[in-house]
Image 1 (cartoon, rainbow, N blue to C red):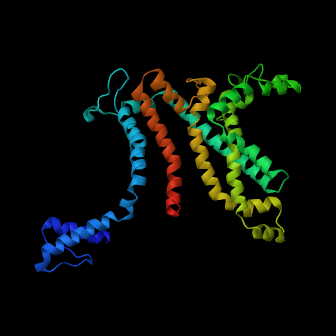
Image 2 (tube, rainbow, N blue to C red):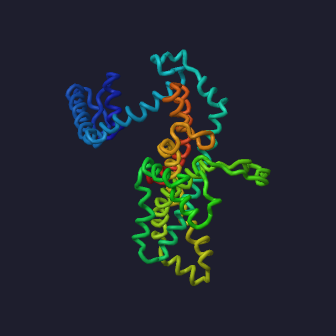
Image 3 (tube, rainbow, N blue to C red):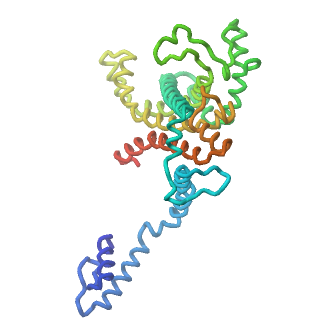
Length: 356
């Protein structure tokens, strides 16, 4: 039975009118009682046999769990951000006391804007460099080099590691006295290049007069971006490699027949067809950049300092170290909005194309 017929049946029964037949008409006056019971039973039977009801044991439990633990937690966090909850007493859930004081406090906090700046620097730099590195690796592997499978495995292996394992590994690599990076630089006679990568800085000198160039360049955020670049370039390579392998060989042959150089062929023929791969890889990489809390926490603890502090570490520090739960929740809401801004356009585009 179609949905509109069922709706008409329920409306007629509620209004006391003549019952509706399963074909959409109304029953005769003399057969209202029998016909109404029959149609109602048929409607209920059809409802029980519908795909949505029959599949409910499979989709309803995860739907309820997702709604409670994910969307319920997000909603509760938003409510907490509207209070002055400090963790020592129960929060007040009286809507008349809700206000935006914590958001005003965040937007007037210089530390919040520093963390926001670092978040976007990490987001944009890490994503852009990972895409560029992944594209270069994909083109190299796609050229049919020897030991292709071995190279592909080596490049993708870091992506399988957790942030915690990667951070411990790179903390040792960056060690000033015994780290592999400085040991290598000293071994080739470049002692003056060896630096305290996690705490050091360098004066930019005359370059500091250039707009947007700081007088002092700190290595912290650069060290984080470089380590994450090592971990995620392999993922971008795999995405781009799949896109390259999906391009028909006829297009390569046609470009060669037209006399196009390798550089021109990639710029005019190949790269425009990798737009979908670029968008999908960029969204995943940006999400991982926003989730870099684990990596920073292992390297620097809950307070990386103003040169590497991002919104997630500031949120953790305010909520769990300073017991400013409402303020930490407000920062978490801002971070959630940033993540939603990254993911929502991609999901909407996939929905418009009928792929979601």
